[in-house]
Image 1 (cartoon, rainbow, N blue to C red):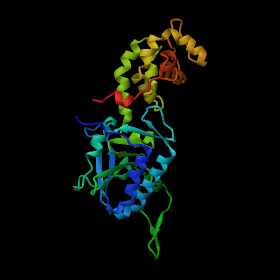
Image 2 (cartoon, one colour; image 1 turned 30 degrees about the vertical axis):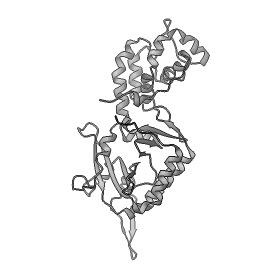
Image 3 (cartoon, rainbow, N blue to C red; image 1 turned 60 degrees about the vertical axis):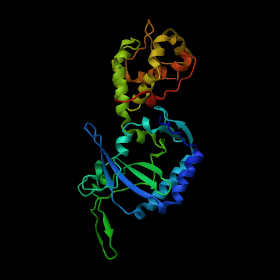
Image 4 (cartoon, one colour; image 1 turned 45 degrees about the horizontal axis):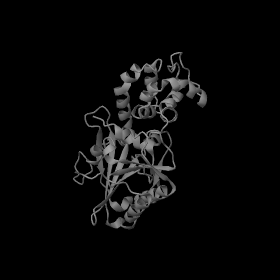
Length: 325
């Protein structure tokens, strides 16, 4: 039986990253750009970047230093659908990250025309990149995840651009491929450590997971008969990036089940918390306009329901409780 990976502490993460900083000349660097292809049989198309390790050294050392700095100033908490604060490093087990294996399985040193970045690739369509640092001496591996910085928008304006070759200025028309020094997330020993949750979610298409959860539970939500115009409420949440993760968390955190079970407490909670939601005579929640959604979601989530109705707090580990496919 395979043992589940154990996450590292802040101190352990710092030591591992510092070891890569101090042994950079002995590590192998592989850089892979990723294009998302929604609706296609293969969700991701990947391209290896063929370049000399020395040419990316300054950028990578800057990235490692940035990671150490961020780990030092932030607290660490388990991945959460709703939580998104700059002061937190979130962690989630690799097996719970959608499409992770599909992306990582494409990293290779066997380069060919099909899997290598070349002049035929449209840089504007690249979404993110993965940088693998591997130390052959001890087998230690660190993977960095960065959003792709697109330059095309600025280059397509009517601004004149020139380069200087030492003797004269000439029009600059070359395409640029840019890699920034920040990192959105990194992977060590079976755990992702997330520095920018929204960008991480975008890379691995968490929106697809959220939509699947909501769609599979839509009929059950409507059948509870607890929200007037429930389908309208669900549709609004599905189409709003702020509300979709929260509705997903409410579903997986059993918010609707608790709402039904404790519906007779709703009037009391409305008064105690000073909520603006309307209730029908038979204790249904009224959804009649988009402005109603935030407080309904608060009521469904642990802000009110899980603590006030059931009198205990439940932490929804949404992705761990739901497997896609």
